[in-house]
Image (tube, rainbow, N blue to C red; front, side, top):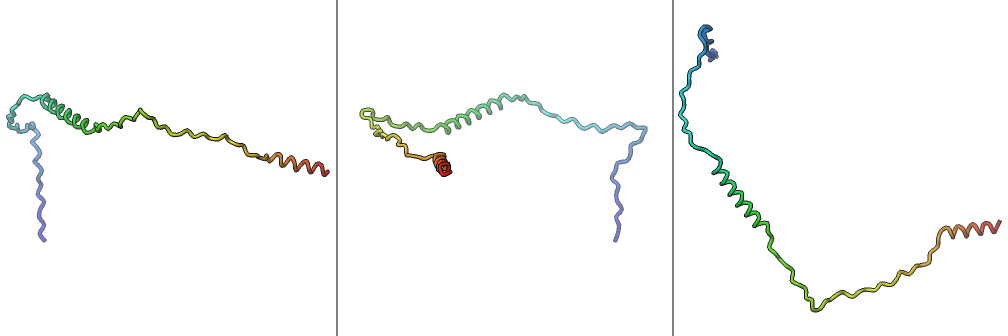
Amino acid sequence: VEEVAHVIKAKPMPHPGVPFKPKATEPRLVETCPFSFDARDKERLLQKEKKIEELQKEEVPKFKAHPLPQFDHINLPEKKVKSPTKPEPFQLAIDARGAVRQEMWQQQ
């Protein structure tokens, strides 16, 4: 098995007497052209308005009206007359207890 020596790729330390001066890059030529957001903003506004109009057209339901009733003859349901409530006889528990006690007192 052969061992390969590790190669050091670090750059050498600069000389202390010479100041560091990086290499100047070549200046790139960039062509400038006039730019504004106005055209893009107007286009977006138009698209937004179109979309809003389409949504409004979709949302509006078709109008469906009920036909008018015939007013020449009116059919009302017959009025049902209810009989008044008839009370049923009732007995209170206290009356029953009172009767039982009265009998007990009479026996004494």
